[in-house]
Image (cartoon, rainbow, N blue to C red; front, side, top):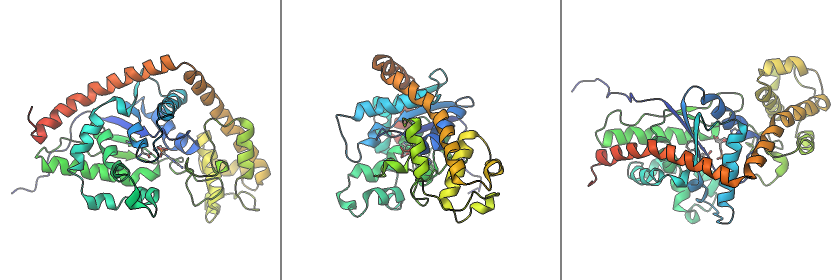
Length: 343
Ligand code: AMP
Ligand code: TRP
């Protein structure tokens, strides 16, 4: 036996990411994921998916599912994802996701999934009453990525563990089916100031659409007055802003607001504190609100415009699904051969 490692994946580099159509998007989604989608499309073949199959793992609602999917897709386009550069589509329109998820169900181990913290958080005390789909959610996520042999996955910090699982599944598939280098081991792209935006009410909780308090988050569709009211009410402390980044230690809510300002203005935290250090929140919060409103208003307007013309939006998404399928279907043909199915 030699010690030479198996050949690594040598195919093209591709970006894939997904977002669930469960309620409107917020500033965390925008800074943690969407702004990266836009930046990456100039450097990689990029594929962005609205993951409606994931959305039915908990509290499915057939009356709103399709509209919510359109809304998230419209937000992608409105934020600057360009259909001439990137592929944008709805997950359930491409069959490869569910087929590959089944095959990966037979690769992933129960023990791996039992360690997933997002399942534990979402299922809470009622794990035995959760859908099997909720437990299996990260396996479908691995299938999303690997159906395109994607090499890079822009996500927020909370998806790190799911990405590690995707790598484990890719590696075990390559080993189990004697196909070295068949799937790439996808790399998460998490870094950046927006990777973990926290709740405006509690600096220990991430900004989330499932938070019952709407004051905890800035929605992409909030108007300038609402944004100002939410930032004004955001939890802080009576001290002025610190002069340096070290001064943010032990002040998570303040660090979060400074991080948001930095991410929205493409400035470093140091530069933000140089401008606002020593000043009070009576000055900083309105400046932050104005900056956020300036960035978000044109996105919300464009999203509304796209949502107002459903036939055009649906045509764009159908075109995206065709392009996605044209990449995934040949991969699935190879997968069926590698697994050894009758063909
Ligand atoms: P979700 O809304 O859970 O489908 O998340 C969509 C994308 O937004 C994923 O890449 C998440 O990691 C990212 N995301 C969600 N919440 C936050 C947050 N508070 N801060 C940064 N990124 C986030
Ligand atoms: N699980 C991701 C989230 O909750 C959404 C998602 C589904 C995803 N499939 C994906 C993200 C594939 C990246 C790649 O945010």
